[in-house]
Length: 326
Length: 300
Image 1 (cartoon, each protein chain N blue to C red):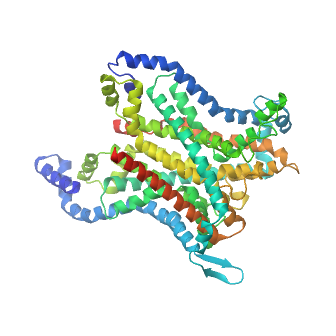
Image 2 (image 1 turned 45 degrees about the vertical axis):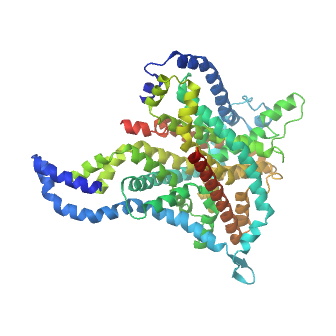
């Protein structure tokens, strides 16, 4: 439609505009326009092609292949056998898998709200500008995001550690029993701390960018109407931030259920606590890389992906419904 | 520029001003507290990197030891195992740079297609990409490994690089960015002047969305730099390892103790320090890009 109107405008211009450049363009125009009709239909696909190619090869194909693999079973004697949903039934009653999932659900229900609440508070405070050295804070908070999770995990691991962690050192210095950050009971909290440290700043930057996109007139209008800072945050900023908040919640749910790096690194220093199925992804890793149960590993990672999709989808649907009703 | 304009409302009533003045000190204190938390492990890492392995165990973790051993640690780091650490550093640069540039280019082109063209299958494809945003890389690691294993492509750097070039989130961001930052009239003017579609993309759209492009590049670069799970499962030759996989393998050696393993703790720590410096520098220099420049792009 815009194409057509542009062409019409072009014709009008050609009639009135006498500049030489224009007339030259006009003389080339008719055949070009004919060709463009065809090109317009293929152009978007050409722009999409590189992305879609990789998308198909390294996102769709692995998933399709995993789905395919998951309905077979490789046995030493019988070779590859079609087993239908047998692997999925096995996942459904696999306490190793569901134990990992419940670890993470507990983890996510506590860590995610704390982290996002913190990020939201920091973002709003930073955006308001009522403080000194705003740039320093914004930069400082985001720095953990530049730290690989492997490094974050091993540095925090050393801090937690009984050998040369500063907390244990101080406790020993005072004659107290050193705190055990790596026990069965405390591990989830220690991991939650690492994740909060890593991602609060990242989420804050997302909120901060969304806050910056709110037109300044809105603030002026709110101020004119006598709104205080709190009212402005609550009734103007928060609703406008909602898409960003929803996005970060879904990312966080994803990230939590996919947890691998941090607990896997902790396995080096707490092998008795982080077993081979502490999280579903650690389990899938061991099934595939260590004991080569490819078919079952495929089923496990597929169920995990499905679980995440269902949770994220349900969450989006519920909040959209809730908002639509209000 | 826009920030300054936003933070000085023309006629702010007294209540607003008073509230901000009163909260100024409280909020600054709060932020300082969180900043201290943020820098705590980094400070620990910095201090620990300057210690000999002996001092690491025998002196307080949050202050310097008897010897300042940073440079000795560094030279030992790059000398250990015939300089394998330098190799890991190079690999990480290679993987991250190709992943970042590829992801940003492809996401910009795709985002442009979604933002400014209507074509058959647009909604379906974009829906698929939105679904993919919800599938993080981690979820694809095991399936990707299974597929690569079937094709006999494990232990190849391409098995790490190519999957890292897919950034569905980047496509989403670029679509929004282009929709809001590039006016249709501008494209139509280009078409009227007889510019081809590629030329319009390259010389009109691309400069306008540069901040978004760099943002996506930066995000993909950092994601690849920090990636651990995929290279861990795909690569098996230490020569191909990125820093994360290499450091983690040393960390396990150190933690297992015995056989001189403990002597590796200081190596792991100074290696960790080296591995975060490039990305932090990158962030410092590209600050203005990752602060979400939609408004900026619109102003320009």
